[in-house]
Structure formats: structure tokens, C-alpha cells
Length: 137
Image 1 (cartoon, rainbow, N blue to C red):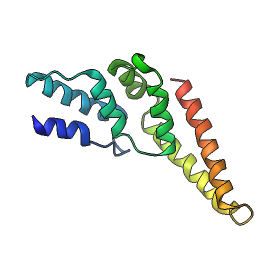
Image 2 (image 1 turned 30 degrees about the vertical axis):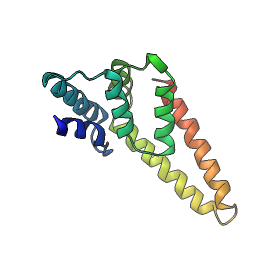
Image 3 (image 1 turned 135 degrees about the vertical axis):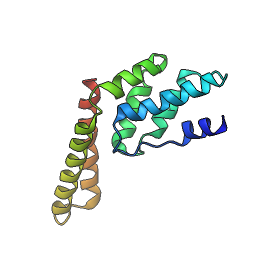
Image 4 (image 1 turned 180 degrees about the horizontal axis):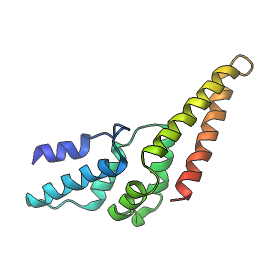
């Protein structure tokens, strides 16, 4: 039993596994824990999944948008939003590509503009992009 809980709270998304498969691992762990006779609230699994996501500006915005749903954030909502819609491999590849393009552009501009200003511009562009992605889901 200890190992199921350990896996539940320590698992991290590797960005190469599909989000559906990643969430499926958590659902399987929940099933195993339940079958072993322990009750596990869905909200604990939701928070474990959110905790497993990368710690970056983009993912922090996604997580915050989901957490803003308050009591409306259930395991069913989370799996529907992240597992089925848009958080597939293509979306990850596009996000990485856009991040690289923005970083390449910032490297070209740092000679003309201060590094701090470029970082602010990149962060604001990424926030707008994430807001557009999360609004469509």
C-alpha cells in the first residue's frame, strides 16, 4: 500500500508520455488503492496530478486556471480537460517550438534591449498563448 501512495505523490510527467496515459496511471493507482480497501477522495488524485506537472510559467497558468474552478474541479473535469482535449503530443511539440522561437528571438534582441525586458516580453507572450489554449478547453 505504501508504494501506491508513494507513486501517487511522487510521479512526475516526463513530457514524452501522452497526457491521457499519464492521467491513466493516476486512475490506475486510485483503483489499486481502492481495491486494497482504502478510500481515496478524488480531489487528492486531482491535486496529485496537478503536482505532477512541470513547474514552469506556462504550466503554472494552466494549473491555476484549473484550480480557479474551485469545487467544480473534479477528477472527471480534469481528465476531460487534460486527457482528451488538446494536451496531446502535437500541443506539446507546438509549445516547445514556440518557446524555442521566443528564446531564439530573445537571444537576437538582447544586444539591443536589456535581458530583463526581454524576459518580461517572453513571459507576457507565453501567458497570452496559455490563456488562449485554456479558454478553448
